[in-house]
Structures are given as C-alpha cells and as structure tokens.
Length: 116
Length: 116
Image (tube, rainbow over all chains, first blue to last red; front, top):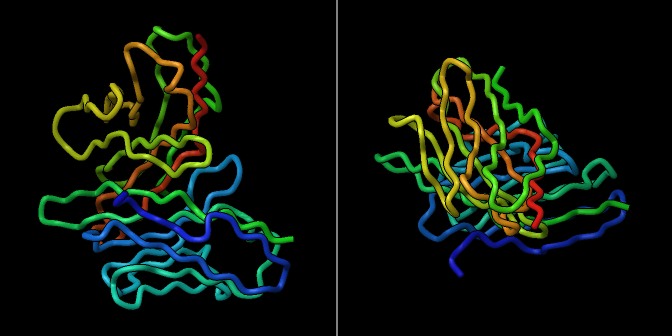
C-alpha cells in the first residue's frame, strides 16, 4: 500500500507525559500536513511542511506542540506535557505541489490520542 | 473569515434514491472546494474537487458536486444511493488568494445513512 501511514494508531498517556507521533507520506509528495480532529468536528489545520521547511502554523499549535520533517520525508509531531484537552485524532496528510496544481490532500488513518 | 457550513448533521435516504449533502462556503476570493468521506476507523478519502471550469464535477464512487458561485454552495450528489455510501462526509475549502498556504478548512461533517 502506498498511501499515507501513521504510527501509532492509538496512544493512551497520562497527563503531563510527552508523546510523539510519526507520519510517512506518499513517497513522491513534497507537502505534508498535520490536522487535529475532535469528536463531532471536522479536521482543524495544525501545521504544514513543504519538503523539510515548516511554512505555516496554526494558532492551535501551542508551544507544547512541535513538528519536524528533517529530511523532507517522514514527519513527527510531539506534544509535551500533555493535557486532557489534547485528546483527539491527529491526522496527517500529504499532497504533491506541481505546476499543474494538484491540490487534493491524501490523509492517513490517524493517531487517536487519549490523555487520562 | 473563511468558513464552511454543512447545515445538516445527518441525511437519511433509502437505497436507490438520489442523495444530496449540502455545503456552503465563505471565502474572500475564489475557492478551491473539496469533498472527503470518512468511514469508521479509517482516514478521510478524497472524493472530488472543484478548482475551475465546469460547475458540475464528477468524482469517485459515482458522486458528483455542483459549484454555484452565486449561492456560494457546493452540494454533493449521487443519482442512486447505496447502503455502502453510509459514512461521514466533509466539505472543505481553500482560499486561493493564499497561494503559499494550503490548509483546508473543513465543515463539521454530515452523516449519511442509507437504508435498504
């Protein structure tokens, strides 16, 4: 399968702990996005990379959140000192930016975080 | 501010009947519009997009959507519903004024239930 993959699929952690999620995009895609989805809501944008450069961050991305894409391939999203309000599904998506403008984003299955 | 509204939390339709899932948007410039579908425990799947050109766009699984600029709407349609179409549907918009930013703004989602 050559789609977007995310690991782990589920994570349960205690409040105050740090967690890290990984996303592997579709191999030829140069753009990678992180979204957060809570129950009954649509995904909300967190941050976006073009290759290894983080080009855009949402106000939702507090200073406890950090994302990296060190070699322009996979990405990690770390949440430090987790809070119960961080409980959500974290979605990764990728897309290919080209002169023809393929703007659709392809999503991974998500990582469901539960903070107890 | 950019936004997407899906006025119906749930749409119920009998198998074989036509279905419509409504979406209206608000952007300052010209929109890029998307529909995604989410099945339980799976990521969002891209259905179709409107970028420019014909107002009626066709997508995966027999779905189509009609872009109406005067009504700022992008309703999802299918001539004959299948039980397997039952899922959560999201409309999303990107404001093309912001060429560098590619974040999608999602609606809250509409649950489609097709009965046999």
